[in-house]
Length: 114
Image (tube, rainbow, N blue to C red; front, side, top):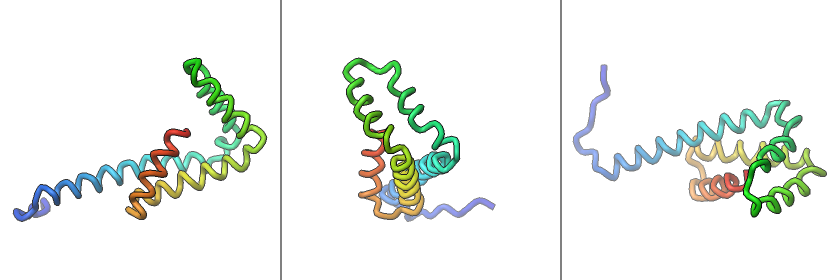
């Protein structure tokens, strides 16, 4: 039996529904990514992921990747845990609609870093 469609739904109501759906979809994507960071292989290959990402980048980005590798390499454990916690919090925030403005900003900034 199909759900009943309300006739009094305004365009702004549909916009809220669509926005919530997009937010939830991104929450699922972040949740899958967070799940993968909690796998043992993530710890073993963390620096390798950064090194692989640096390959083939334009010359003007090489200092950026060199900077990150110099910071991360001596403190891999710290960055692994920070990545796990941040990605998990972003996923939960998106899925449950918590602190949306801050989660959107944090997610966008973290996406630029990774």
